[in-house]
Length: 138
Image 1 (cartoon, rainbow, N blue to C red):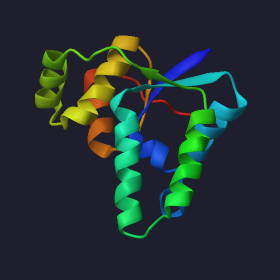
Image 2: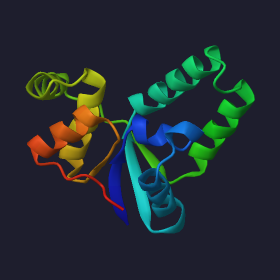
Image 3: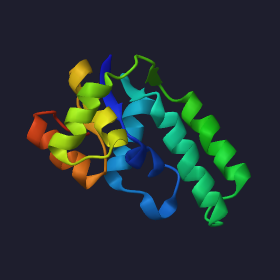
């Protein structure tokens, strides 16, 4: 089974029509049709819920649609890494690459697991390239 780290920015492209992209759709196809598995840090769940809550407040999505999307995510082969992050490592990655602590957690996980990173976040893509972490390209 091939693994990769999945971040919130790419995940949410599966939820909102105006964020859909061919690459995001191809990654989703890999998860649903092939022997692929995504790994996410535990904060991923909170980020997803936060994005949905903000979208609901902005009337971009209904609560019912948010719940359907959360059920959809639960059906995918996404493994939540419950290993506590070494906050010193996350701090150093954050400072070195100018990332938020949240984004640095994804880079840290990809580094620890030695797997590619799937993201649409431009700063995180740049940091991954600088850190020698491969990007997941379908």
